[in-house]
Image (cartoon, rainbow, N blue to C red; front, side):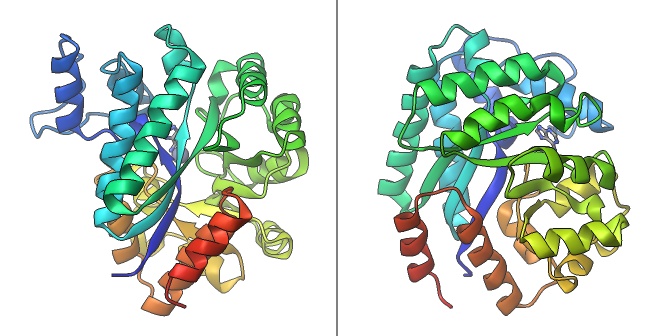
Length: 319
Ligand code: ADE
Ligand code: ZN
């Protein structure tokens, strides 16, 4: 099995329906009506209804332990598929709304990472993400909290949410704070919106990676710029097809981006929502073993883990 690494997966988006049911039961909650269809999977039809379904899944989480169990469960499954490293997008918005202290939430996540390392040998790290449609002030508050309370596993800062709202420049103060404090930075762009959104992100934010970024393929000058700057795309083909960006995997620009010299990685985004997994993304990428190994190495190189951890993981992977 090829050793894999993942840079783009959302904590709550990794919750499979069975785990959502278990969490609801544990917390004495009814599952939100309309969340799951007759087939037992999450119901949504487009990007905004996906974000709404995502929010509904979040309502099954109540305690710091719940968040930790979600992370442990994801790391266990990823390790079974050959993952040696996972960087998880974790938003402090949900625990904050539940009255869980930032430090207590992080400790539950860290305990999950330690337990998964012990049980499966997988390494995990945390990227704090803000939610774009909640606005720049919330983002700045998240960045401030992250910088004020450093944690051994928190290595980066990012942003998801509705790409159509606000501009990257609006979030520059939050990103500047994160960058100046030494955190790696990434941002969702070029997913729902086109190349202009990616141009703005790489112009106005101190990012070395772009979440998705696939719609850059619509602008040859942007593709050249990404390749020239070595900006790494966190590509999630299954997510893009499920959300209707492309009709099928064959139409996805992954191969065109690679051929143009753009550094890419493969990721699952919100796997149960999109009926995928990290292993499935590697399997269905339409790439040979050498190319997949290169992608896994790129993910480690572009990860925000400390240099010693990156060196160790690269050393343990087959060339
Ligand atoms: N949050 C969770 N998944 C997301 C995605 N694919 N795009 C933007 N925000 C997200
Ligand atoms: Zn995402």
